[in-house]
Image (cartoon, rainbow, N blue to C red; front, side):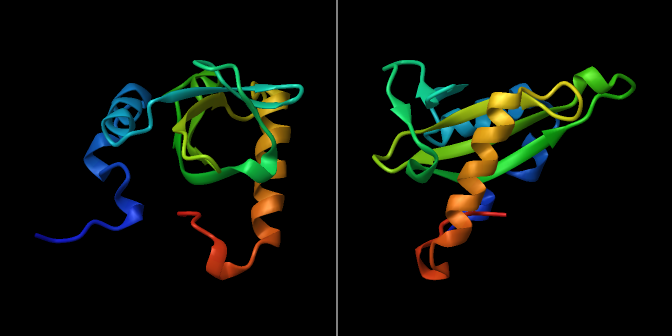
Length: 123
C-alpha cells in the first residue's frame, strides 16, 4: 500500500466545490469549525480561543465563482498546538473578513519565524 503524503489531504478530484472539499477534509479528521474573533481563533464547539502561534495552516483551497466576485472563497485546513483539526472558510478579495485576514497573516508570520525542521506547513 502506498503511503500518502500530507499534500494529499484532499484529492484533486474532490476540489470541484467548497462543500466537496469540506466534506473530504471532515472524513480526514478536520471536524472542528473555527471562527476568527477579536481575541484570536475560536473553536465553535468548545469556545476555546487560540493565538496565532498556536495554529498551523496545513493547506488552503481557493474557489472562484464563474461570474460573481462575491462567490470567491478560501478554505483553510488548520491544526492547533493541542491537536484540534478543522476548517475556516472566508471570502477573498473585496469581501474578505478583515478579522480572518489579519489572523491568518499573523499565523503565516509566526510560522515564518520557526525553523524549517519544525514546519509542517503544506503548500
